[in-house]
Picture 1: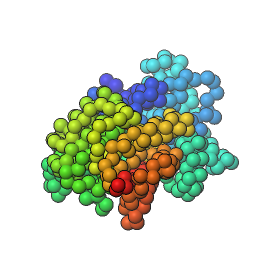
Picture 2 (picture 1 turned 60 degrees about the vertical axis):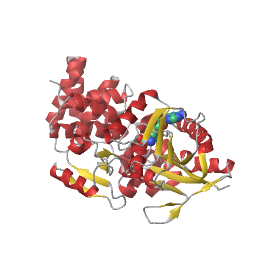
Picture 3 (picture 1 turned 90 degrees about the vertical axis):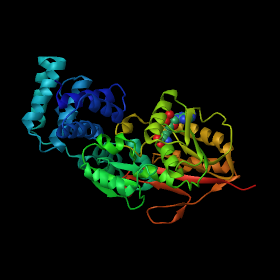
Picture 4 (picture 1 turned 120 degrees about the horizontal axis):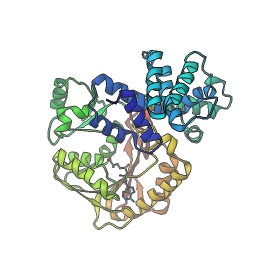
Length: 434
Ligand SMILES: C[S@@+](CC[C@H](N)C(=O)[O-])C[C@H]1O[C@@H](n2cnc3c(N)ncnc32)[C@H](O)[C@@H]1O
């Protein structure tokens, strides 16, 4: 039988070496290996913890590496260091033994000895002091395990204090939130049933059908399995909430997969109107359809379409939940911080503008387009919408309510520390009446 640490290490290899997405890979592994509640917790903590702290762990490890080691050995050592530094309930001998066993199994006795020697050094000597790093951006980079270009961008746009708060928040575990499918169950009933299933449930102050659910994975709950709730982050729920959807609305959601917001829109419209949910990737259309079927929604159609290519028809509301760098969702997908680059951000900005240019033609007179991203990069957010508006005087901002203070704003940049939720950007523009 494969041990929890072996499974964790295999997942880390899949993500860090082979480029798998952590959240998808973890779901796959947990479905294949039915672990006890405690082991699921340990598995999640080891994978997410090591991914989130990679740069910090490597900083601490480096002085103890005296000879060349293979990439996988370094990654195994990061996982052991994570347990040593951040999980103080795990005894030293347990974490060393487990690492040595994995190393022996994979690389033979010699590799096992090397891992043993390094970890014995690590656990008997003081670790380097991050505070001794003189350069501020480098220090924050190591402290919060974020590349310096991200730290630099954030400090430039948000200042040092907000950057640190944001970086610290990104290291915290994500809160488990669900959206109640009000076409099938009331919020009160959902709270009662989840509580009966053993979860601790708190209703959100800002969005009544958003529930914070504590307890073992909510995917196991009857309500999730029967399509009465969907897993969705609170910040992401604000998007459909801000679309000012009226019964009977014709809606296009052009970057729709896996369909979280399209289904939310359909639930708000409660069987009325019609939503076209499209995505460029054929294989993702099945994911949208799966969610539509599971939630029993009747007012959505889904099909493959490239949102940079013309659509037919005119819509009351269009949602562009754009492909983006995803730097607002680092708690769910921690590895993005190491794979994203300023060059990729620049390419994404091009696509975001192309999509806006294209679908804007399908907004009815007086109709509205919501542009959202799950990032905190201004290039992909404010810069995109202002660039678009500069070229399109036929559109104007439609003000939205800032849930933090009730003020009407043109653009809303939610940071992870605002609601202990993802970083999200939302703005809404209206085609002026002719
Ligand atoms: C942020 S995700 C959308 C998440 C979705 N709205 C939800 O709430 O579940 C962005 C989506 O845009 C899609 N995409 C990327 N380029 C596209 C294009 N040119 N046309 C349509 N969809 C595109 C991606 O496949 C991805 O599914």
